[in-house]
Length: 112
Length: 118
Picture: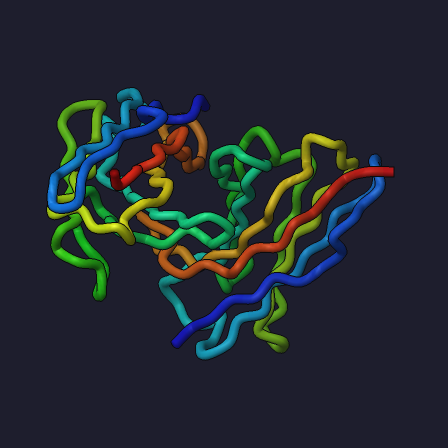
C-alpha cells in the first residue's frame, strides 16, 4: 500500500488560508470515510485534528476544516496563526484487500 | 484524561528482537470501543501504522510487517506491548503508541526512539 500523496510544503501569511491536499485511490481515500488529519510540531507526537473526513475533536479550533471528493481529501486552515506552523499528515483506512491504515507523505505548513 | 507512555530499550542489535511497552493511565485498557495501536516514524519521514489490538486480544497488523510483529495486551497491568523480530537498520524509528477508534488515532504517547545498530 503506497503512502497518500501530499504537497511537500505550503505557506501563508498570518490571517490567510492554506489548503493541503491528500490524494489516494479508490482503495483508501475514495473508498472509506475513515479519513483523519494530524498536526505534528517538531519533536512532538502527532495530534488528531480531524476525523471521519470533516469532524473536529473537542478543543480543535474551527479554523481547521476538511472535506473529501473522490480520491482526494483536503484540510484548510483559515485565519492562519503562528502556532499552526507544523507538519500535517492525512491518514486513511485502506482495508479493501486486507486490514490496513495508510498515512500521507506529510506537508510542512510555514507561516510567513 | 487518558495518557500513554512508551518504554523500552533505545538500542537494539541487528537480527535481535525489539520490545516496547505502552503504559495506559487515566483509563482502563479493557474499556470497549478502543484499539491500542503502534505507529512508527522513520527519522525525518512520515508515519507508518504497525498494528493494533483490541482489549479482547484480537489483533490487526500492517500486511508489510505482519510476519515480524506481535502486539499483546496485559490487562492486569493496563499495558500493551510490541515485539518485532529480526530487526534491521530499517526498523530504526520513533515508535508511538496510540489509542484508536475505528477511524482515527485520538491519543498518542510521546514516542520513543529506537535505534538498530551493532
